[in-house]
Image (cartoon, rainbow, N blue to C red; front, side):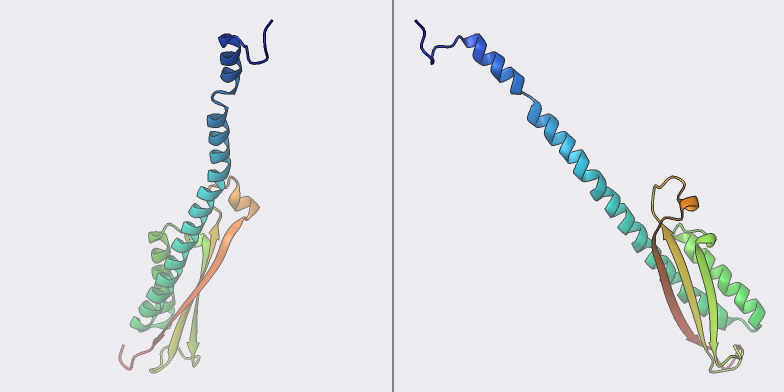
Length: 153
């Protein structure tokens, strides 16, 4: 007569084999399930941070370039080109940005005029297929910089 404690070694090993490896599979599945959103969040925050640096640099350069030019029309074009170049250095296209020049008082070429360059940038969500069609944006960033028009051009 066998007692409840008497089991053959083969039965114990069979029961142990059915549970082997499931913890590794569960851990791998849960790690992937949790890490993908975390990595995507980090990439998105990095994209927004890069956009912040780009907008601040573009506004600063646009204001400096504007006050260094003598002609207001040429100054506006040069300021826009410098802002676009600063944005492209950070990996953003000109289509994502808008540059505006504001003068106070309205005559931009007179000495003592405060020239403000405002740059607006739309940062798209990274790695989204058809993102431009769907218009899924991570952030809309704005920066401004002011320079005073000098007495001499």
